[in-house]
Length: 167
Image 1 (spheres, rainbow, N blue to C red):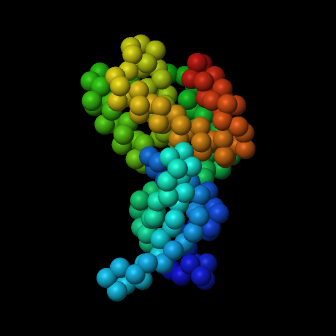
Image 2: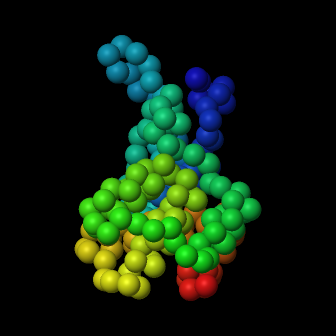
């Protein structure tokens, strides 16, 4: 893959999602020499955490880096949050592991499921600290990507999500 010839999956300036970290922008495609071998890296700037990650171009897909979802996919994820969440294990540690696995998949639908299930669980009983942090992180990931995909501000997306969760 040669960045100079445009054979990378993502272009400079393109927004992408990096699982568990959120929305980022490809700032550069850099070449580094490691053990005498030239390796291309995406430099992805994550504004939420104000950091830049270097992800090997040839491992980006394997690491879950993907394009922003379409408008329809974002709406489908948000609309799918209406109604009852699927039942979760009573043990918070098992729930936490299950939800961590869903977030690691990096799909907007999986993230929406985590938000939905933890939101409804929090209405029954206060979430443990780790689960609350997981909920807040998943909600931020969902809001960030949805606001970009739907071209709406974060407050409007938050309101949309909350109204779906309350149905």
